Length: 308
Image 1 (spheres, rainbow, N blue to C red):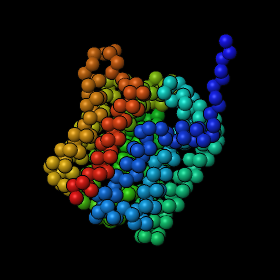
Image 2: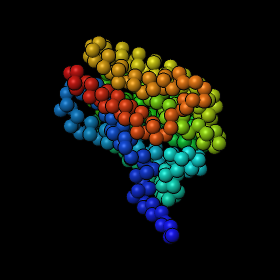
Image 3: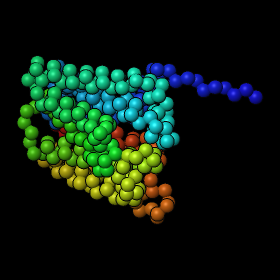
Image 4: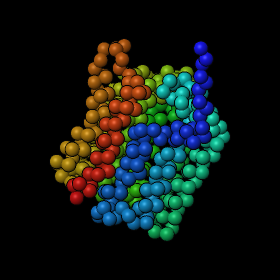
């Protein structure tokens, strides 16, 4: 019986794959790009102003630009992880074009941020974008490569996908930084740090084999789950306090409830006996856990408009 050869991966599909644009990541990226806007805008009408549109576009481009860079540099380690072999194959298909794509996208984000800074007198937008992209480079590139430096890995991701995108979009409209806003953005960054550590659990064996000393690879799954639970508890405490200060206790409870679903899954896994499947699989994270995470992200985006 003849065996059909696998269909070659097209460049278009490879680009989609290395940018991680499969469900539910695009929804998450959009939420992260918008997080700070609602807490700065007086109403929904403020979302359509030129500086906000340019800033959100720059924020979104910066958020996805890290992915082809990471994929191009992690071809070998991703090939060791079943759920990431498609990303590895896509990065190999693109070759050096993946790095060029990441560089062009980062440059575009910086250029848009510079326009907002100069044209609309919002320098913090450009500075925060530059800090975020600089941290992306430190995370991926030698000799620093924060990815392989223990807890610097999830902390860098928490800043890149949490606090700094909030600062970028908020700064498009406001120059003042009330304590509750600072606490909220810090809490979101801590929440994303815990998530980053949780997302890395299925990659533990591949990270260890490639020399990336992530917390899970160095200290084990159960240790990582304890840290996920602890950081998530701290994040939810900060977010609850900040939302209560801004919009009242009922909205704070709603925010806490949606943010607690994913850490509750980590706590449930921590309660399992040793060797009883405490680490989640990549498929369960993407299909189930990420859905709850994106729901929490969407609530944090919509909350100021609902509460206002």
